[in-house]
Image (cartoon, rainbow, N blue to C red; front, side, top):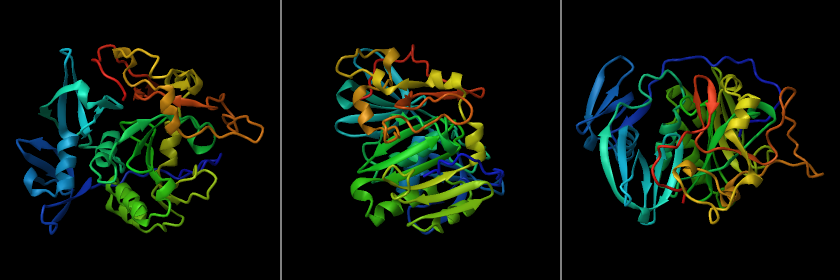
Length: 367
């Protein structure tokens, strides 16, 4: 968990050569470090650090790598009975729900509302050519969606944090499986950091903690960063590597919200992605202003809106013994916490955080 300290480190987030990902074949015997370029005609294009491009049939990859490449590069169309459709990335399907990534929102819709799911096209991998050592928002979600422990992936309200290193840094939050939570901080296109944690019955489950460590490693594009995470103590630990902080936080820490966490982040990047007061007013909403999903109408404009029922999954705002928010908003700017949450589909355009525009979106709902 990120430490909510008031001062920032002077570390520089150094750009280093990245390999992208470790790929494994379907026998488990062959592995290669390479960056995904795209999928063409059933063939995965992988670019190695030396500039060579490998063309690997999808069927030759192990199951998890095949799913990752397919989901990351594919575009699907959800067809509805009212002649509307939704172009998106399908993350998960079950007998009861369809979970998709639409723009920057994760939507979970009743399977009964979806008449058909049609493959549209394969596109160039959205992460191809990026110099960042961290995976982007879509890659994080696709990686989560294919994990056997991450069933029922669901975006949940992200409570505003307005003190310390994360003061007014927008983020998106997700729950998955049995008591897993994932948070992605900053610009979805180029995150400043992410974390995964466990709560409740998984706090004493060592295999769940190993799942979290392996998940974080799969999102790091520099092999040395992965080794840094593997070197962390599962009890509590912190490594600093070229401006990147790798950290394990136990549930006993005051900023752990009762969970066990493994986090990777750049304090420099977090500071550069802090939202202004004007941006915060645009991309946050007071929790007590949310309506019940039973009393609101579902329309294209409401696609991805939070309901009051969604708040049950959000982190509670931190309060003092007297009942007031302990968040002061820092030495500059006013407080935006005390129960506010970020809108689900915020993006960052030309350096400014903005709300999603959904006027042209088809029929759909969150649950």
